[in-house]
Length: 418
Image 1 (cartoon, rainbow, N blue to C red):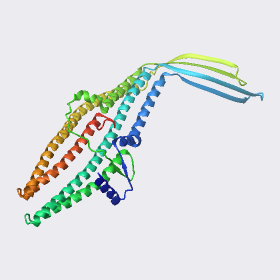
Image 2: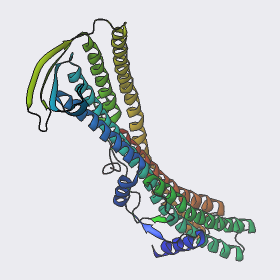
Image 3: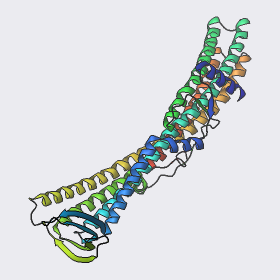
């Protein structure tokens, strides 16, 4: 690890970055929740939905208003007169064709849909940073592996050079392994530079714009797993898109019922108390109370149009819900199979690495002792190095597929990497 840290410090010197910042997944999650514009925006939308629901609920309460007036005037006899008045009025709708009730139903469904949308926004933010964090861990592991390959290529060059000096291999074979060393040096420098790219992408996902290099000691922790095939019809019912589409359909249904309420009369109670007089405080008291009933007899056909429009919108939302179910079912099957493929690929890559490593050890001993040709040894050596790279790439692919699957399910920062 000391050699790696030295290489990274040298990289900072080359790129001009002032310092590194060590992070963990826990710290990345905390920062993203605090700074992500998409999460903040989704939270504000959820707050507005809660306020809209509260506004609908308070419609069951009476409207109370206070009034006061003062007037001064001159009569025909050039006498000045003053008048004071004040009062308190209240009105309460006791029946509006179930409009208030259906409005509360609609806003309640909208609120639940907004909560699902917020959960989706959080999960999407978690997926983005989880993907970029996996990429950062892969970048550091690539540097480590590239360093190991560089050292191995150098050892191979020294071995072949000895054989060349003793006349056992030709100059072309020596030049090939020398080129391999240069390639390994290039791959190491490329991997070191890529840390800057991966760090910048993770900073963007977090919502930061700092000129720092993010460093982590955590590494890709993905193993081959056996995942039980779920009941996809039940699985999708907990996905945010399903929940949002369901409540959107319920909201449209309540809006349709609210529109149909225009066929009913409006009934309300009202009452008030007042005082008036020529002096302050007015001494003449009065009060009133009553009930009013109103009914719109003719609206030029607007009522029918509004009802039909709301009914059509309810049917549109219902069809959208059905389409969302079908889409989620199809995507869930595809995503799940991709997840299984990535886990099984790790197992295959591990078997292949174990076999190629053992074969490389045997081949190297044979070649040193003159029992194997250069071409046989060289082919097996390259196969071993490539199998190391393939396993690391398979681990990264599985980490991304796992994050993608958990994001599809709508999981948050705490469980996106499980």
